[in-house]
Image (cartoon, rainbow, N blue to C red; front, top):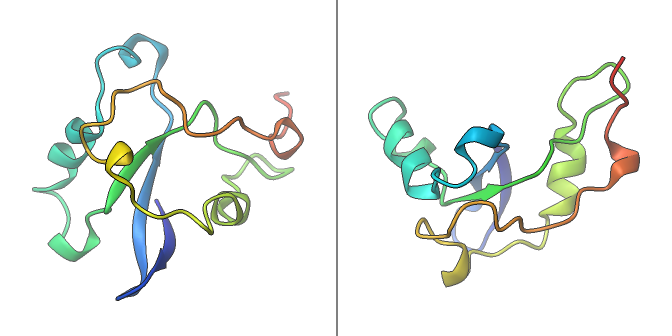
Length: 103
């Protein structure tokens, strides 16, 4: 989950999800939102869900939210990115240099 710019609320949550390969063909943004809805406050629910191939990591293998925020800084919700978005249509190519090598 990262914050992206919003014209009314300054920032809103955007869920960045990396699905397991076995769920790639069946998982949708609606599934993610349905899972979160009873677990978090309404204002915490993300406005949308984007599916990624990998989350960028720091040199110590922590999620690098700075890279994600930079990547999505100009992101605006579009009808093609709504909760009906089919899964595995990745929205960007990950920057391989931003992903820490596995050890």
